[in-house]
Length: 267
Image 1 (cartoon, rainbow, N blue to C red):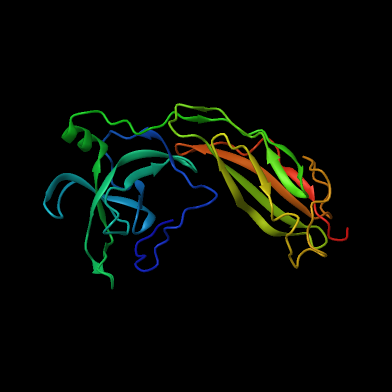
Image 2 (image 1 turned 30 degrees about the horizontal axis):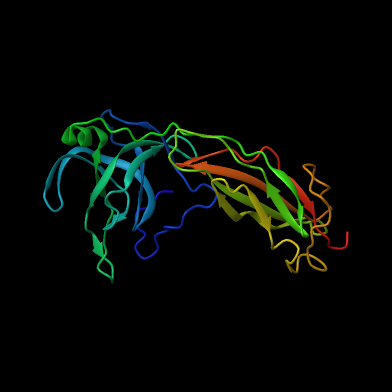
């Protein structure tokens, strides 16, 4: 996702499928022009582009020596955001902190935007403050093991607590659902978070299943049979669930099984 100009159209929505970046390593070397770096900021969200200049003296409100310059769009309010290199889908290597932006244009509300931003490298930050700054996490989040059943004609998931190591935060659990229409062989709702629980709360009732009215289903959609981890067939309409856990920016794998509920639509 290379973004150069997103004034008035910057996407700052959190990706519900991958809401976290986990910092798994720190970069303390000398960056090289051409490195493809990312940043996340309050104003312009997540942008990424090439590192265009290294160890350059820049002026914003005052002179800053030996700063790095990235050719990616940023705006006032993004200062303090992390700069990083993505090493995987959710894993990143920390490079430094954004602190300034070229002022190329100003929005109607006075927000300043520029096509380049400046960041202080981790090396420089540690040199200025005189200590070693560790930003990586060694948190390990277990894989939820889910027990599924029916409670008052609703889908009911429970017992999915996990072990979290080296984290000050309790786990947050995300309950994902997909709706599939058998007669038309179509997914009417792709995997979507339909609920969350936190800490010792490790059960969830999907009250929308059992009362849901959707034109994709004949006669509404009531949970029909007790759930199974075996797909009842592509011609059967199903509600499907799994659970993920996250803590301190680290996500687990999905639960060990996907649970299928058959829903009544005349077949």
